[in-house]
Image (tube, rainbow, N blue to C red; front, side, top):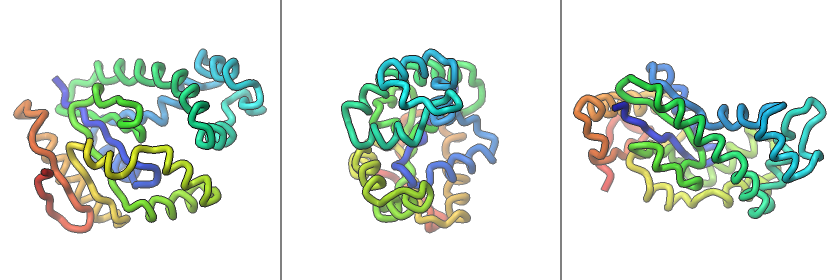
Length: 220
């Protein structure tokens, strides 16, 4: 049985950087963002369902989903976000389960930003959280997506609180924004997961691994 790690983190926490480091080590990773794009691709049943639910105004000129307009709409309206998720989440889950069933290595990873919010913990054996201070997330989000701070704050508020994510995670990587330190932290986690997979001990004590120093401590 392949150990399945659920990689998650708040918006602009640095999850993508961590994911790329695991991929560089040869770990099979399925990115839910990529799956989410696939299930609403032009001509897909998912996109047709979105058009029926939200209207043709959310379909771009090229026939694809107008992602920016949809994002602004659902982060300003919780009920709209729930309607969108009711369409996309079952489709995403189905593809993720099918991919996971094909894995035969020591461990694999499902990268899902809203793993906890969507209650997808049942799909993984352990949750690895990439954590960053909220104000650092906010600054990164405004710069990365070139959006207003007000929208960035709405997006952060729509997610689970930092405290709740920390409480739900088995393992935590604190990302202060130093790529070299993140690489060291990922290497330590990689060794740990290989050990767990070899022992078949999927529920071993968690790690809190600061990306600012080459050490880890047991999570209480």
